[in-house]
Image 1 (cartoon, rainbow, N blue to C red):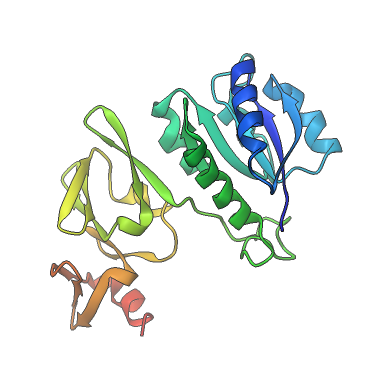
Image 2: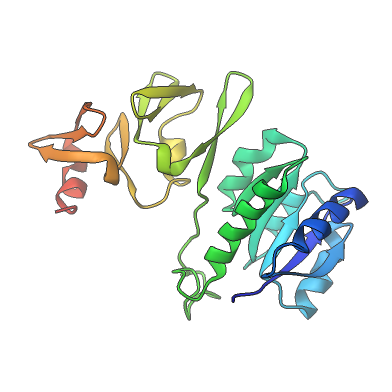
Length: 239
């Protein structure tokens, strides 16, 4: 069984208590250290092997996301925060998951299971080149988008395609969609490789393509999407 060595970085004692209590019921999770300031974590990371960070955002002197940006080769990171507005920024930094306080044990377990999968020997991120800048990127299993005044969490597995709609993007989950005030280009770097841009107005998830015919792709939702001239070479590579 792969053991995850985890470090808690949070200025709230109650947050430490909750994570420690939850960790007692997860046999593969070992809390190897606790820090109440991000600046305290540097020494711990230098002297202790750490596979996972439980990282708060709003801390004194050095914010959690600013701390994360200073790490050249960070371990897996699970954000634990009471502030949902930082979710998108967290995922752009390739965090494993984002837990909104207060979170349940079930939600905590899902997050640490994702981190365990990311750290498993079979994971593509755990190769001999992991310590180099050429290591494959780990992508989260969820995506946060702003819908009206809320940060909505979607499972990537549920997203069929994304469609540009003026200054907005329609994120389609089957025959329904969520409208978010973003550009289509802003999604490109935050989506895993099984998403591909086929047109200036469309990004599709390949597994939801039913068939390709000429310069169009037909989705399992029965939507026929055009393939842009500049993207046809990408589509041809799928055969």
